[in-house]
Length: 323
Image 1 (spheres, rainbow, N blue to C red):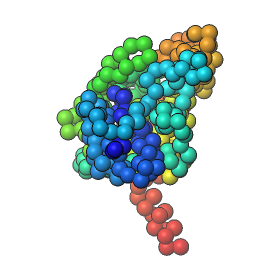
Image 2 (cartoon, rainbow, N blue to C red):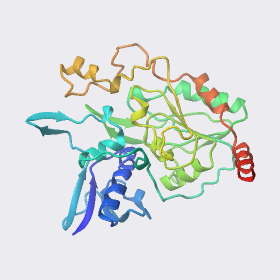
Image 3 (cartoon, rainbow, N blue to C red):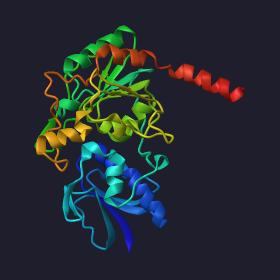
Image 4 (cartoon, rainbow, N blue to C red):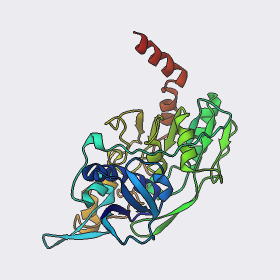
């Protein structure tokens, strides 16, 4: 019987981060597997995958592995809620099948990529979209960032698509922001925007700047410098692994609050009088008037400025290779 993995998730990033688990199952059985998901296009030409189908396609005739946990599990007669905000996103999938992943097994790999010519070079890609309040950088900050980067002669390319996401208590309408880009291009909601083209765009970029998002995980399948903006979820649970590390070309720019309340069990107890419940993750669980975990614009600009250009990296690589 053929091996298949069914991914019961709508979010792009959650689907991409199932890939390390898919790779491990494929290696264990020494065979390519079939995948059912809401993003079947992601798995084109993937070496671990034989076929990729939509989630609603019949799964009859397969030895099926379902990921992730649905909502709750009964373990030793106790109802256990598996808390997405408290578990590394890749391990969340692996735990569903009873194992964990080693650091060298945590990398995500995609094989869909197309060139996307924009007329710019050494540009910065930004992802200014709305989602949970705790994971949404204010539009004014995005706009200020664009102007400040443009003032330093750095072109900016904006990407993002409107979508919806099921949160713990409600559905979030994830819209793109109307950002003015004097030097660069706005590709948000562009009909040509595919994950393959976005990967091509990122592999030629100076940096990607994003909140915790699906695009963060797409960036993790490329060689781009990633600057992740601060939020209430601990970045160690989300930062991509590349070359066996979360430090490779990855920079976290947080705010002045580093409690990471969304990933701290004491707030589960505060809300539910038990760890087996999830508080409203869209909110500041310290009830502060502003999200102090969010980055300020100056720190993000400084992070971009400190990155070497691709020309400098080429010179360094050439120097190292010649002695």
